[in-house]
Length: 401
Image (tube, rainbow, N blue to C red):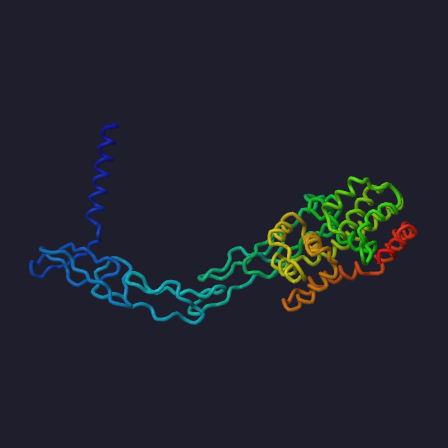
């Protein structure tokens, strides 16, 4: 049985090879009037046309296609095909005509061919993600974002994104997302660590009241001596001096002082109110709900040195949507010699008018600025900070001016 099977397979293999050899080049049937016989002639290859049929004495004779003519397959026609004329409006030549290919025209990027016209791809509106991006042959295919996903932009390419899982970042869900908005999470110190925000926007606004107009070389030492409560050890102070610029040193010192005295009643109130401030800021920032493109545009609009592209990309991956701007503003402030983040943001908003940012975005950013510039923050400082250190530090500030 095995022997018979082997023989059958051998015969099949021989048959396949014989058939392949017999059918390539492809053949066509031709009646030879001289011999009155039916002959199997070789077809002409792509790029050529038939000049003379085969006979019993010679093979088929083929000639090259003339200019602006082509054949793209084996055939037995006496003429080549004429190349298509110039491309239509809003098309470009993807491949020029040659002996073996017709001219290939394609719609410009962002368009597709519908009958005889290049139509612009359909963008997917907020609440819909791109299921299949548009191609030169077909329109964009959009799909409504299912539960747990959202799209907050009008886009030709962006798919629906999954809602941020607040607990993954140590956050609390403040407002549940929908098809057009991400979840809004409330922050805490743990989330800031994961995102890498060192001095938050609220801490900056709060601590900036303590920074004199002109900082003298001994300012940090004087501030350390006059702050109430537990003192910061010398090693920590030296570390702050080595790692940070002059103004940032003040921020870092006050942040460390706040941590070292967190069990004292006077500091507990500061921590509580700063935490409340941060929740409000993150709520406003969450409503801004910037897309990746808008986030890049915002950072590019900030004055001074730009935050590197890789830092922007890293922030979009490690921070929640409500923390991304806060993280990048912090990086921008340090990169630009401790510039005021709020002033930088106000400057950026002036430029963003030319980019037609959605009103919801600009309004949310303006609300954040107004909140941090409000009298509430100033009264908070007066109540909780000046009362504690005014007697000790005020004289020092005057001497530093």
